[in-house]
Length: 164
Image 1: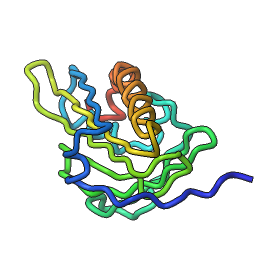
Image 2: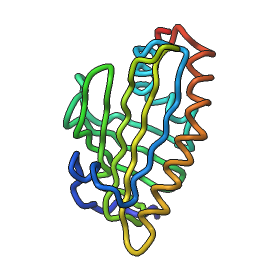
Image 3: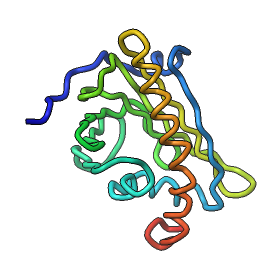
Image 4: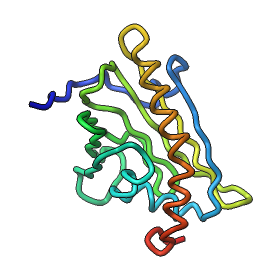
């Protein structure tokens, strides 16, 4: 039987601003910001560029602050709540509950204009018992850094899907 997700400490902008266990990744895309944003709204796209098995948006449209989704990573489950949302530019969420051995975690995706298209800036932070939070944050960062070029390839391979 699968483990049930456990509730985490509430995390928001103040938690994200902390430094312990915080990491960043950046990638410049040769596409308009709207195409990268569309890829972040596409549940199936996440499974193509990250080691994610399934993404389910669990809130009805329109999406914004308070939106929820569930992410499956193999046997692990993460229930997310969005605390930051600027349509077309930014989405930030906390891990509300998960099967991961952490106390709290957040991810923040910001899309900025760039001379060559746009740049996605990801910031993540996780804390947990002893060094576990830092290890989880490092794994998240590695996944994002390895995945962003794959996201670029995905958008480039099907530009109509993402409005590029």
